[in-house]
Image (cartoon, rainbow, N blue to C red; front, side):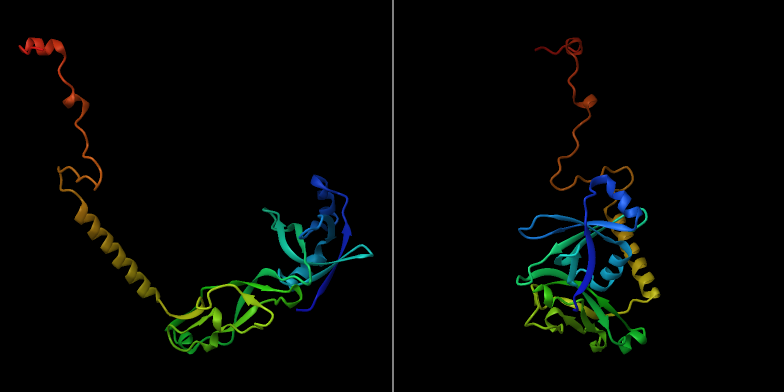
Amino acid sequence: MDRLSLLAQERKILGKKVKTLRKDGQLPGHVFGKGLETEHVSVDGKTFLKTFKEAGETGLIDLKIGAEKIRPVLVRGVQHDPVSGLPIHIDFYQVNLQEKVKVPVPIELTGEEPEKVHLGEAIVLQTLNEVEVEALPADLIEKIEVDRGALKEIDDAITLGQLSYDRSKLTIHADPEEIVVKLAPAVTAEMEKLLEEEAAEAAAAQAEAVAPAEGEAPAPVEGEQPPEQSAEASEEPPKEEKAASGETK
């Protein structure tokens, strides 16, 4: 992936005062890294969005702070306003170009839909949308492509171990047998409705089987003590009543 560049300025405005920066089209952010002191910066909002759209979270960016400093960074996080959805803060992670990093890389389906999909017999089911890779920052890739056209028959699948990427530069720490995408049987609306009706009938039959007859106490749950007698039935009669009935102590 080609290295991009982004201009930034050292930021003296901190805390709640950063609102003034955003009004001027600037986005506050900070640069951090292993063993490095955090550096506060600001970048032009429109330029950042354009750069981030191209770089994503795996593209290496030369962050040029002022006229002298250049920091090789990755975008590690973008905070958004919960109402407007616009970005309000950026986390730049400065990397050591000689040390490997771990980042999530998106998996993108390419190629034509399998014939069985066009016939309505199957659907392409993507079970993994991204995978964590380890590589030197300069060797990171934007995405891993998977050709869905390789799926011919129902239950055909493509696993992590079958993905195409440069294994001399990238390492995926995951089970190579984990399925990324497969060709699954299509469930029509009629079939789905039938399955729902069958499930409802089974649930009703089960409820009827365990329901107590009218006037019959429900059976106690296994491991649960039967309900005790009511206080009125279990209490002994007062002493006065015992005496009246001729009982002795």
